[in-house]
Length: 199
Length: 78
Image (cartoon, rainbow over all chains, first blue to last red; front, side, top):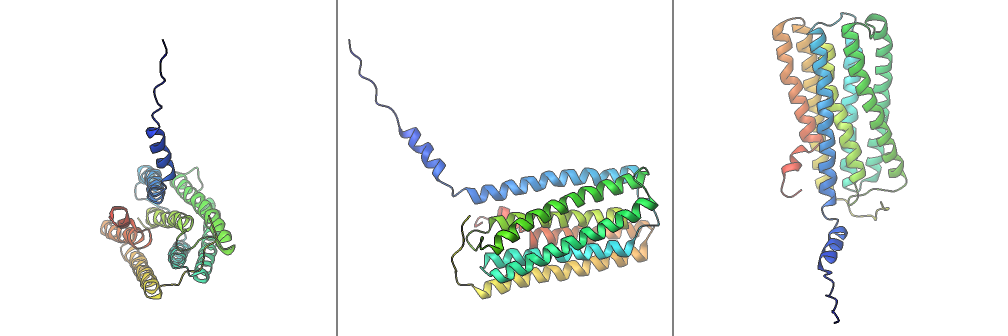
């Protein structure tokens, strides 16, 4: 008795192959993934912000350098504006505007880091990490500074690629992702600054 | 990732987008200085602390809306 082999059903494989070739969902997936990452970061920062009020209430030392804190806040806000201008420029193929704006963002980010480093040296003298306020202060500033450094690295990579001719109006996701992350760093500071210095 | 070809710039839309960003920057500056003034006047008082909260959330919303385009997440044409 001979049995005839049933024809292979290739329709599933074909559909699967088409699904893999269809990349139309990718930009939306990229955006969604980035936002989910940002939301997870919000939870992380919220825990640290809550810890500051839990450990010391609204007490804070008189030795905080208010002028320097306001100055670095303004610098970070300027960096966020220039990052926005860089993203907008590349979306409209304005390469010159993109390079200049991103350069300003990097410069402002580095100035911010310089200010924070100076501030940390002062803070270590007045309220060291062993004190209740000092522990919250150094944890929050340290966590944020780590994000600033990683943001600067991401922006630097985008900057170098941009100078070499990458990115454009139809291919700006790399810029958008790095810039959104930078805006999140700024957003976190909007809450950290009053939490540590004003409230 | 490929090198892009030159595409003509739509200057009207570009200027509108720049204006939107600069408008956001203006309000961020106003709110930051306002926040600092409220702190300087009401430091140590309960009302002084409470008055800072709207400034914080308004600044956060400007960053989310103008700079991070959060509304695009639920926009059907995005």
